[in-house]
Length: 259
Image (cartoon, rainbow, N blue to C red; front, top):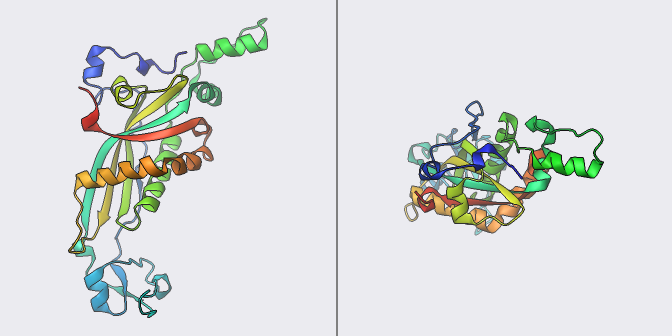
């Protein structure tokens, strides 16, 4: 069953797997959040808001501030708390491999690929099987790419909300069944994977005790994917036919890919 012309990769392409793709979607916009764009933070007073920079309240409303659990005292939202100048930005680029059931993917995207032949006079079941056998699965279009970026952004913010604010997710490129990725993940029979190079950024405020590096940010992303990836899959399945066939997702450091 042919899934994509990009699955036919020779030795030279394998050596430059990270740099040669089909179906790049440059028009798609990265999913972003406002991050710490407003310097509003909660505290019992301005000094506490400035020193701790723990609870942002971009709305400017006191009602968005949680009370102090230890004392039960209310916190207020303070403008120009001085936290914005303390913000650090983290970056991670890696591969996200979205796994599909091959047959379901082709059935759900039959109208999008433009390669769904009809066979007059052939029994319906046989014609359907032959059509699937000659069909190529389409890559995500711009709208689907933005759906993935937005869903992934929301997922990461939910998973890392106690640590940082994930501000952007951008799919740099995509291709089906890249050999260098399959060499790491090991793909079960009957599945195909949409392998994407994804760039992610986040912002956080060091508290004097804990600081993060870009590598640690990557570890947090991959840990979240390993532990809670089904949450992302369930969210995607409800948003577009191409994602209804999704069965799993995995993130991979580029350093793990064979050269």
